[in-house]
Image (cartoon, rainbow, N blue to C red; front, side, top):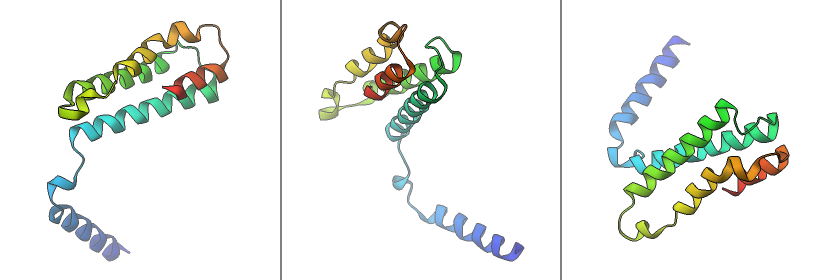
Length: 114
C-alpha cells in the first residue's frame, strides 16, 4: 500500500511540475471563485439555519463576497471593465435593510438573487 501511495505522490508531483503555470487559475479567477463560495455559504446559512442578518458569520460571508467582487471590478480592463458589478455591490450593501424582519425564505431568496 505504501508503494502505491508513493507512486501516486510521485506522479502527482511530476504532473504538477509538467503542467505549464498558465494553466493555473489567475488572480481574477481566484477572486471569482472566492466570491461564489462566500455567496453560496451565505445563502445556505440563511436558508438552512435562519440566522439573522446581524449574525457575525453572515456578516463575514457578505463582507468577503463584497470585497472579492469589488477587487474583481477594480482589476477588470478593456471590454470587461464595462460589466456592471456596482449593482451587485449595491445589492449586498442593501441586504440588511432590504431583508429586515423578513422570513428566512425571503432572505435566502434575496441572497440567491445577488
